[in-house]
Image (cartoon, rainbow, N blue to C red; front, side, top):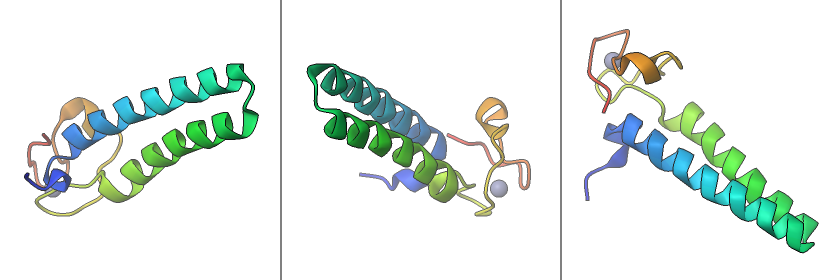
Length: 84
Ligand SMILES: [Zn+2]
């Protein structure tokens, strides 16, 4: 398996999927009556996104932290590397 940190955009998509799953699971668990577990699940999802954006959302070539706008342009604004 290739190192996913070289593919921040793929990793971002995976994180968003993980967030959606955790969020929905959290809501379901909340509705089933387990408030603590529901909040833990939703918190994990939010935490995953925060970690993704602070630790892994960086250019694989020049290692600069990418701006949020790079999600649209799919390019590193510092060195022009394509973000996959
Ligand atoms: Zn770069």
